[in-house]
Amino acid sequence: MLRGALVGGAAYVAGKSSARAARREQDQEEAIADLRAQQQQQPQAYAPPPAQAPVQSPLPPAGAPVAGAAPTVTDQLIRLGELAQQGLLTPEEFAAAKAKLLGV
View 1 (cartoon, helix red, strand yellow):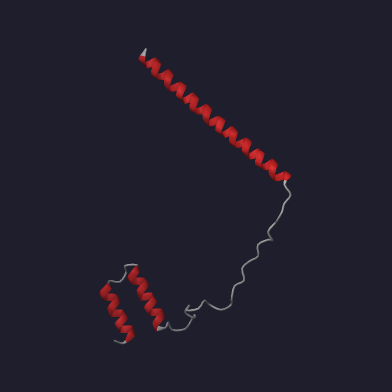
View 2 (cartoon, rainbow, N blue to C red; view 1 turned 60 degrees about the horizontal axis):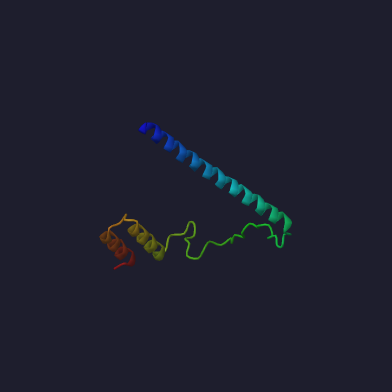
């Protein structure tokens, strides 16, 4: 008898949950239909112009190394700093490489 009550109770709860979910879905569908009807009734006030492709400069960004040119000391120091931040260089290795670049 206890088993029957548990099974019946579980079925009741599952049915009630399913009914709530169905009602929620129906409410959402009605809200979407209402919004679509409102949008069709309202005139389009503003339509943005079509997107245009961004204009790209023929020049490289400031500070970017030029292809084929030897990297500057600044470029090399920046690269060393990046390697140190990534953990690929120890602080001692970074200090030694920086001193070598700066001629110290």
